Length: 319
Image 1 (cartoon, rainbow, N blue to C red):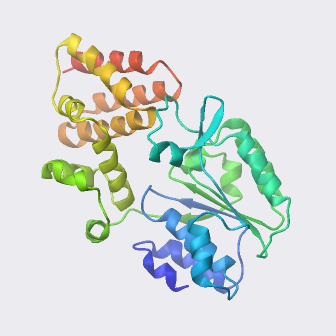
Image 2: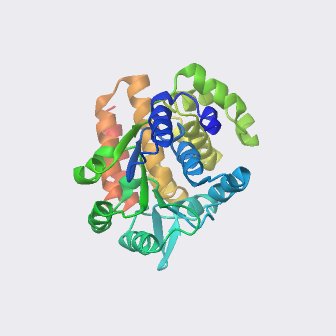
């Protein structure tokens, strides 16, 4: 269990999991709950390795888990539907595929889990299912998952979430909670120093880097996401976003550029970023609420450009 030492600042989560392993009392389902980018997925992989490693090639087990090709492990993540095809969110992000609606965990993925658990494990005592960003599950999939959790047989579930309140209470009650917390500034800086960041970071002003770190809320992984999201915005649009436009024509043009250039995930990130800025720098709760309403509109699949136009004009009127 030495690999748990590579996880920083999550003493309680590690204590719960190490105790389960040493006592050989593994629960049928765990809820890894906490902020994004603080080690939830890394911890899940270490936990899986400890369970799947039966005095076999430890490095080989780790590599197979990292590459998601272990026969007794099924990793599920939210997907987009693009031209009738299901695209995992990780692939969409890595290939910069343009999407206009948020990803979901869908009923067909729960059916895949049921089929997976219906077969005997190949190499292990149990089959393991990890569901990433479980808060993105839709209603039909949520009901199907609940029935599956009620009778896991030899299955083991790890549900990873940063919004546990979004889940059915009956799903939460069937899982052992493993809480993850934000890291303190010293821990974050220590990890960030070790991270391989993109070369374009030199093009970002130091005060912006500080703002992106502060916006990470104790999450090194979140800092990398913030950095990547900021760098994914073109330089001309970045400049417009950093100044306050008051001309209505310019605001309408800005709404067009935001929705033309940024996919829905990037738009949601930018809303979060602007909410943080409005609260920290201006203590402006009204703008925070207006942006929150915009987020709800986007998640309800309202026409994005229209939603941005209305919000930007309203914010301008209140300044």
